[in-house]
Length: 164
Image 1 (cartoon, helix red, strand yellow):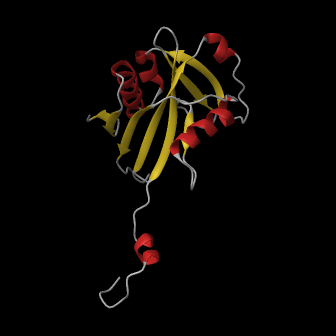
Image 2 (cartoon, helix red, strand yellow):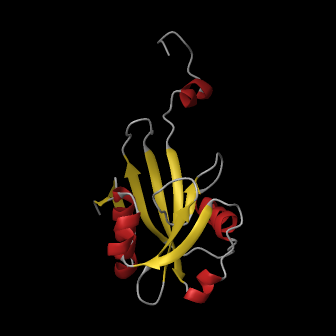
Image 3 (cartoon, helix red, strand yellow):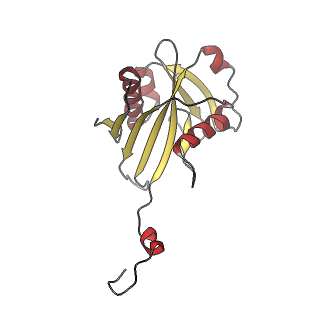
């Protein structure tokens, strides 16, 4: 916008950056293992969750994804992690959220319905096993979420590395 052009909210907003966002849910069992899901569309595993749609709050995304991927209707707990992810290769920068899903039993997981074909399986894994299945930045984010659960706090991360 040149100095001679009048200011307008539309022009200002059009020039703002857009960030990709995603939200996931951390479920644990009574042995402090985390629930991971095996996607049908890639090799790396995930926690339940997904991309935030336009005009959707991250907590609404997490709830929607639980229903779509696992056939679950559950209230979310508190926010555990906010992670700023740097741009890389063809991916733009992003802000990722993890919410507390609480604890599940093996019976709860056995009753899960993979309703949309996006998820092939789900299971509990300790952090060492999770690191083998997750991309490193998500493994770090999950570890940060477990730390947040233990400490009763919210953790800030950059690319999965805890900063606060």
